[in-house]
Image 1 (tube, one colour):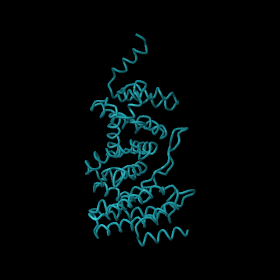
Image 2 (cartoon, one colour):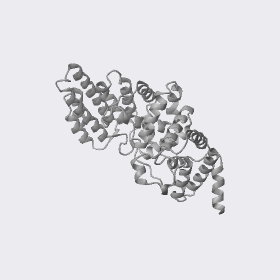
Image 3 (cartoon, one colour):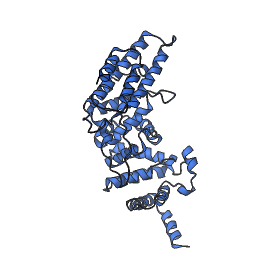
Image 4 (cartoon, one colour):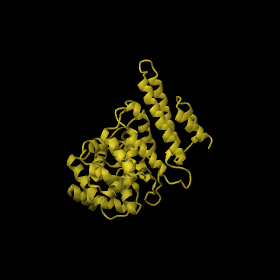
Length: 370
């Protein structure tokens, strides 16, 4: 028996938690020394008790989730070890690189389960270093990527709704990890009041109340994702997406899709947040004009729906006018605060196609002349 195979057998006999601690140190060393990525991936696969990357059919893993490979006890042990590890005094760039490496492509059920439990535990205990790393991970993968949306769904169902008594932790989350909080809002906003999905779900009341409280108490929160990222040497920061457009969509469509809840306080908080946005040093980077145009398209579709004879009513017309008034206010404040980037003229043209509304006509005229 070779010395290498003998060492590996001894390594595998170690307690799982001890083995993970040892492997994390080896991965950290390899990342810092910029070793071959293939070797790092093999060590990460060992942590999650997965097959070696070279044994996995990449095409299959992209098409469907691979089966869970950790036992429930091992998942919980791994969460504890990772919580301990990410609280260690290591450079932020290394911490972010480790988190990105561990969860760069969570195509297995085990990785998704561990990620959800890890972030939920971090929120419960307000573990700032880990939450900050998770916020960077979301931003680098994209807040509306499938991985970020899966995490958002898990947090909503397993933590925010299930653990409603954890209000203190949620209350202080923006102060502890502002980037993570902003990115979670962006991801969760994508899940509700959104015609991308066949069934347009509405946010649970606790979710609406939480987001409203966060944005009302922290007007700068929606811009937290725009602060510089601390990444490993050579890494490129991905484009930033703020929660603004998603929250505006919630407030604009709510009178039609969630008429039993008032979104007026959240709407006001968004307006105040945009008004307090510092003037851009270059081009605006807060709200993409194309995302605002998507709201126009949704409103057009809703208008066709409520004008059908079986749906037509004065109440529907009244609610639709409230949608247009909120949208008019949001567009005006966004443009006057220089928050919108992309093709503003094209956005104004799209707005002209909406049904008549006095305030909207004023907004269009005012901004076409500037």
